[in-house]
Length: 274
Image 1: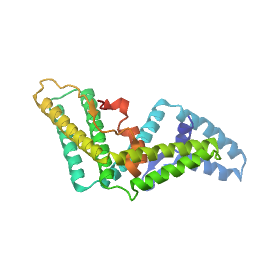
Image 2: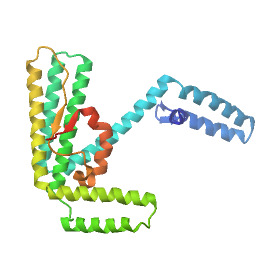
Image 3: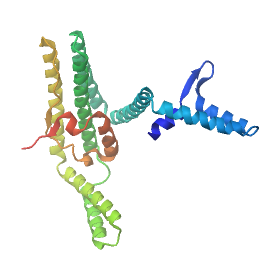
Image 4: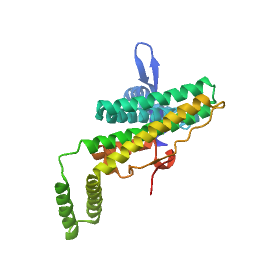
C-alpha cells in the first residue's frame, strides 16, 4: 500500500510547454510557504492532502496504472540485461540466436494470418519466448566454457582446500560459516564443470540443435494445421543449466532474468536423465 500512497503523492500531469508537473508536491510546497504568513494554510494543506492522496491511492484504476508502470520499468531493465548477455556472444552465436528469433516471429505471423484467437497467440508467444530464453542461456554457458577465466583446475583446488581449512577452524560466526559453505559449493561445481568441459560442450550443442529443430517443427506444423493450436514448450535438456556455476560471472544476471523470461517450473523445460 505504501507504493500506491507514494505514487499518489508524486502523481504528475502534463502541462503544455512545462512538461510533467508533480501537482501534489507543488501544492504541498505552496501551502508550506503560505503557512509562514498564515499558519491556517498549513492545516488546510494537510487536510487536502489527507483527503486527496488516500482517495487516489485506494482507487483500483490508479493501482492498476501504478502496477503497469512498475511492470514496464522492470521489463525494460530485464531487456537491457538480456541485451548485455547477447553482446557477450561472438558473432556466430548472435546470428544463431537471431535466426531462431526470426523463425519464432514467423510462427506468430502464421497464426495471426490464420486469425487465431488472442489467447492462443499470447500463449504461443510466451512459449516461444521461453525457448528463446533457454537458447540464450545455452549460448552464454557455451561462451564461458570456450572462454575460460585465468583460473585453472589447480587454482580452484587450492581455493577449495583453503576454504575447507577455514571452515574447519570453527572460529567464524554461523552466518559467515554458511556463506563460506555456499562459496565452497560453488567452487566445487566449477571444478566439476571444468573436469567435464568437453562433455558439457557437446551436450550444449545437442540442446541448441534440439531447440532449432523444435522451432522448425512448430513452424511446419503451424503452416499445415487447419486450426491454430497452442504450442508446447516442453523439451528435455541434455546439459545441466540448473547449476549457476556454468554461467561464470554472469550467474547473477541469469538468476535475475529468470524472474522475467522463465522459471523451470513454468517453461516445462527439464533436465534429461538417463
